[in-house]
Image: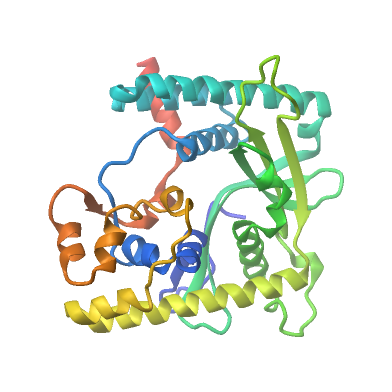
Length: 350
């Protein structure tokens, strides 16, 4: 497997790749999809602290620690947090607390993995594998994924993608096989390996599967003090059977088809504010879930209320003032944690 793979021929037309994040935003709340993925607006101020940022840095540290050119996870956390503190000195105290917690979690994982022999059974076979795989039955569209690591079980030979998560509990591990992200990873690998579409009635060739399952390791966000109650870590391996892949393909195809229709309708509306308002209040209506929206969506406070009122006030709020900025929501695919950390290490040593 190569680091970056476009599963399409040079002669084929460009494929519009849709990621799991875009699909799930559409499924959860079409209005968030519209603001984030179609108009490409995000809040101008994004805080460097919080659960999502802590999880991303911990994930990067583990990914690099277990990569083909290993970098110690504790060192990675040090340089990542030092860079954030330098960039956001007003958040130094909170970032220091996050760094301390992250390092405690990482140290504890290595002790746990050594005691249980968890690292002895796997080897990394690929990293940073990005690909866009055409969707059967939906010409011009594909699923876009980026697998951080693929590992092989040395006892069974089974290949799996590996993901690192943090949380207040082990929900991410307990339900990992049902996670749309994990199912999409398996589906992308299934289609990329040349297998017939799952559910097509054609028997698959098991020997051709690249990766059809995963390993999710969850670290609980606790400092492991004397009063803290274990367990603090949970690792789960799972495999997605053909029946689940068939259901996943059907769901993904439906979501991508709905997104393609929405994009077409919006493109046709162009700059007509009345037409755009009609589409955003009907096809792209808000889905309100009490206590979930504020956590889930950066547009839930203020912008959503403006859009509910109709008119052009929300349009003006997006383009005027300093509340929002535009940028490609797929920029995160260009992030290379290895190069970023190595550059920070060179800066530190220089």
